[in-house]
Length: 579
Image (cartoon, one colour):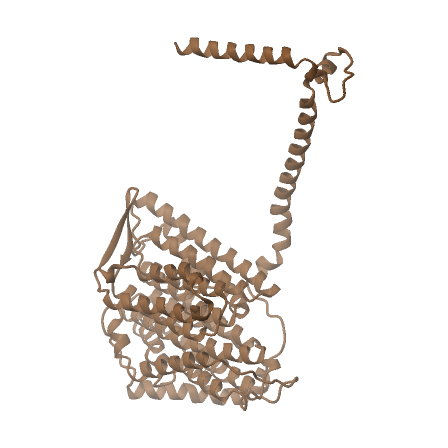
C-alpha cells in the first residue's frame, strides 16, 4: 500500500513538519521528504489509482500511467538535487515554501480529475511566489506580486474552464479535451504557466529576482507541469505548433539581447518550451515522446545552468555580465560546470540535450512541416550563441570588470549538487535507454547516434562558434532596459488602480466615516432619550438638579414598568398566535 500514497502529499506533509525540526538539522531533514517521494514512486505501477468520494464526485488523487510516472520521477529527483544545492540555507520560510512548491506539481501530475489538479495548481502559485518575495528587495516584492496576479489570472481561467466543462459534460476527469469554450479556457490557464507568448513575461520578470536557491526549484517545476498538462489535454491541437514556434524564436531573440545572466536563462526557458509546445501541437507519438524527453532533460541541464549562475551570484553578488568578466581565475570549476550545461542545451553530442531535442525536430520533419524544422534549427543556433557562448565568455573572460571582484567561497553542497547534475547530464547523453524506456508509447523510433545526426550536431556547434567570434563586439552586454509584453500591465497599473481600486476604497472610507458618525449621534441621543424625545416634541420637563442625573434617570422607575409591560404584551400576543 506504500505505493498508493500520492507522492506530492509527502512533500506537503514535510512542509508542515519542517518548522518543528531544530535549525541545525532542518536542511538535512528537508532531503528526507523528496527521498521518500522517490521511494513511493519506485513502488508505483502504471494502471494504479486511488480515488476518494467527494460530494457526488469521485476524486482521483492518484492516477498512474507512463506520462505521469516519468514526470513524477523527474520532479522528485529535481527536488532532491535542488535540496542538496540549498543545504546551506537556514531560512525556514524558504524551506517550507520549497517543499510546498515541489509537492504541488508532483500532486498535480498524478491528479486524475480537474478539482485535484486545481487544488495543487493554486498551492504552486502561492508557494513559488514566496520564493521570489524572500529575496527581500523592493524589486523582488514587486515582481512577486506581479507573478502572483498573473498566476491567479491563469488559475481563474483554469477554474472557469473546469466548471464550464463539468456543467457541459458532468465529468470531472482530466483527459484529452475536444474543443468548445470550456476547453479554450482551460488551455488559456495552461498557456499562462507554459509561458506561451504573449503570456510569458512573468518568467523574465520573476526568475532573475528570486532567491538563488529558489530559482532552481522554479526553473524545474512550474513550466514543466504546464508541458505535462498540455500533453495530457491538448495533444494534436494545431494552434500549439505555431504558438511553440513563436515562443522558440521570441525567447532566443530576447536572450541574445539580455545583460543579466538569469534573465538570459529565463528567456531561454520560453524558447525551449517552444520546442515542447510545438511538438505537442504536432501530436504524433514520436512528437509527444520528443516533448516529454526534452522536458525531462531540460529540467536537468536548465537547472544546472541556473545553479552555475546562482553560484556566480552567491560568490560575487553580481548577475550582470556588463559588471563581470575575468572570473575564470577565481571560479574555474563553475565555468566548466556551466560549459557542460551550455553544450547540453545546444544539443551537443554525448550530452542529455542531444538525445531529446532533435526528436522534436525529427517529428516535425516526419510530419511534413519544413517551415517548423527551419525555425527550430535557427533557434538552436541562437541558443548556443547566447547561452553556450555569450554568457560564459563575458562572465568568465571578456576582459576585467570595471570594479575589481573578489569572489567569495561557494558552499561545498552547491558544488555537490552541480557535479551530480553534470553526471546525470553526461550519463543520459551516452546512455539514453533508461529515459527512452519510460516515455509514453514505448521506446521512440529514433536513433540519436547515427553518422548523419552526429555530423549535423557538430556542424551546428562549429558554425555557431564561428559566427560568435565574428560578431563578438556586437554582442557585448550593455546595461539597458528591455521592453516586453509585461509593459502593458506595468504601464497601466496606476491607471487601473485609480479607476478600480481607488473608487472602491473611497466608497468604503465614506461608508466607514458615515457609520461612525451615525453611531456617535445615536449614542449621544441614547444617553438621555427622554430629553431627546422632549426636544423633538417641543416640550420642556422639570429641571434636573442632582449631579449625574438626567431626565431619563429621574424616570427610571416608571420607564422600567413601561418596558416590562411592553415585553409582557409582546409575549402574550406571540403566545396567542402560537396557540
